[in-house]
Amino acid sequence: MSASIPPRVPEAGPVAAPGFDHPRRPLAQRLGAILWPSFFAAGVATMEFFAFVDPLALRDLTFPTLPLTRGLGYTVGFFMFWLATASSSLFTWWLLRPASRFNRALR
Image (cartoon, rainbow, N blue to C red; front, side, top):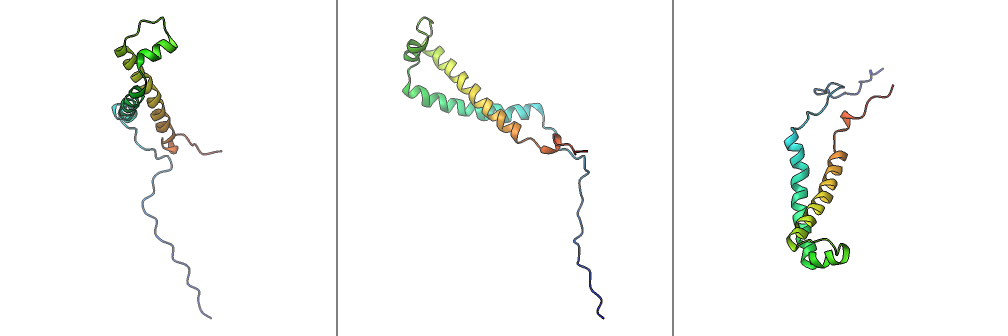
């Protein structure tokens, strides 16, 4: 009879410990990853929006009694766009966090 040869099992490389977690990034790096792209996107969105909409005309349609200047309208518009794009970046960051930090083994 012929002896059967067991299948060759590849050697396993170094395996991380079961409790391995990705190192936390510095706070400045985390904030920069959220705020810088959203700042850039808010600038582009502000230019696009106010190329077609006059802040004073928008004020007259929405809040005619407020004494807003054109410059203040641009400023408020930019910060509103920055808030919207920062929340989008924050949500993306939240979804991309390593699962090993939050998924615990079921008992």
